[in-house]
Length: 102
Image (cartoon, rainbow, N blue to C red):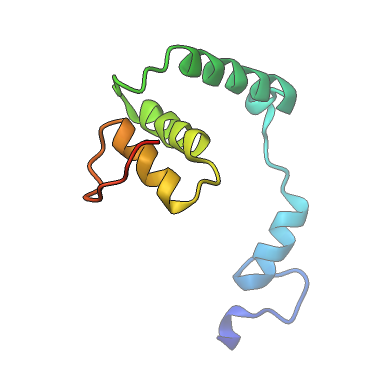
């Protein structure tokens, strides 16, 4: 490992170059110059559109699957096990348990 460690500050090889190279070389990010707020706003608009067209009975792509998970989390929330089973039975998911609907 010692052969990769340079004792002089003028070396352009080994770990010294990595540390010094990061300090002196500036990366050019000008083509990625969109600011954070506009990217976030664009993302929120896309997600809003996907949520508005979401139909839990017609899952068509990966984003629908992710929204469906959020949908289940929303309707199930902090339910106790009996309420959880009742909801699953109501929407037609077989739980293997018979729970009376009150």
